[in-house]
Amino acid sequence: MREPYPLEPHVGRLNTLVGFFVAVVIVANTTASKIADFGVTYATVAILFYPISFVIADTIAEVWGKPAARRTIWTGLGVNFAVSVMYAIAVLVPAAPFYGDQDAYARVLGGVPRIALASMTAYAVSQHLDVTIFLTLRALTRGRHLWLRNNAAILTSQLIDTTLFTFVAFYGVYPTAALWQIIGTEYAIKATLAVFGTPFTYLLVAWARRDDRGPVAVPRAR
Image (cartoon, rainbow, N blue to C red; front, side, top):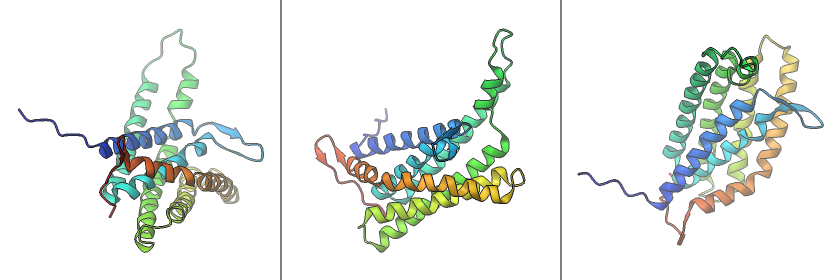
């Protein structure tokens, strides 16, 4: 009988990060239908959660390298697509005669195909761009200045993500000037959250490189 593969401590932590990455992506897409009042502007609730996925992706790229980061991104995209299909099936299943919340249920989970397409397109492009920029700067800085690599990658990829999503989802629906206003507002909030999230990247990287006995020699990213 074939013995199960041993689970190294750092692999277990990678699995944990991948799980949180996928969860954040799903939560961001599910909560994106709510427009929140942030006092000075309005934006989707998803902008509070989605930037976390870039922090996790950068952590995985820093500790485990490009292959692991790419697999994480594709896993997130695949699970997001599967969840969208399951949501659509759940909405299409006939509701019981006494169930009075079908319309609200459909609005939250059903979504719009164009919005789903915009979300997945922006996700695929921006997440891969984030990892590419992060690892390119990692090579140029010889592994130093994590704060610089993290912010440069996230700020650039978030701009692409916001622009792509807005134009794919709403081009022709709202005036072009309004689209640029939406992009500016959402990006400003995302950029602020990204900068304040830098310390969490350091904490995650330190955590990923440790096991219960202390520092662990995780294979260096390439």
